[in-house]
Image (cartoon, rainbow, N blue to C red; front, side, top):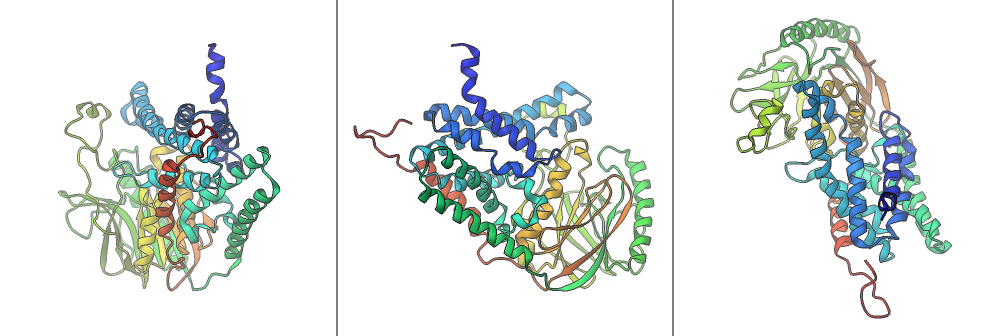
Length: 490
């Protein structure tokens, strides 16, 4: 068989990945996600199960090569070795593609059994699984992510998290597939009514007014590279920047100054060691490390009294290294020598007369951390981040977009401070109401509505669990029988 003939079955998978890539940063043609899966789904109908698995693996490999592209320049800059940087990038993609090989098998079964309605929930169920699988949990590249730019379309996240919005997005592609498949109007009508009904529910919530106390906070963006700077020079620049930001916060009559992660550089006790002076009368919240052994990444607050909350979700191979002692080749990557310890709980902080839910960098990707902060009584979510490792890729914007999703899911405003950017303020409907210019020292004044409590739909945490269960059900459901009494060709 000619090479062209061998590759032809993978063309639709490639087309779908290209559409998804166009929807994500930096191109941001976000509405393409509604039709991105159409080519791949149409092709899966014509394949047997083995071919569907291969098609899924090809889809997943290309998907992750795009989504994980930020790994290569990060490792190249960290190690100074371009060839070495290709190893973790390709390894992560080869491993991550197995998710989609399984998904190809599941979606093929949905199509063969005429249960197309299962496709959206199976897709979203896989997003849940890869977001929370132990050790490798990574909620990245969710198909609904590009819609953060369209807040009226994403309010379903308040009823069922971002994963419910992902299912709704995939339902649009399924509707197009049904249309091309010659499905009768009666079946297609119900599909369209459900889709449009959920859209109406989203728009209705978006137009509902926010209720609460107006508050002004200053989101301080130091404008200092916290990833690749000389430590002494970084400390000097941070000291100068924070002094400027503090002065501006006082002038803005801010109730709280929020600074990014990386402001505290160790120390065994609270107060932490910081390269700046505290300003009398100005409450401040920032992130940093504490403790020699064990060491934690923590949020610190001071309003006349010090408070501290430790980070619960750590970055694998960044803040801790699994199998460090048994994989000697890891030494070539010059990984951090000491592992941080995760907290066993998510803690809110009382500061400046309000309850703030700190989320440190990577934690901003996880809906469960924000949900726990909402349960803790948080009135404001504060994301403190260092995205400087990934400048020049689409990763900083995708990290920023997570703050929009956490705001909608919890019904809480979010203040996000990042060292170089993106620093933003988000209201409880997911609108970015203030944004700092990237890469400069900037005191971002944020006027937000502080609710008495989070506006969360009861039982929202059940939805991701249900989606994962539906994925399992779709993988194990019986297929229809042919006239000969054997299962339909799979």
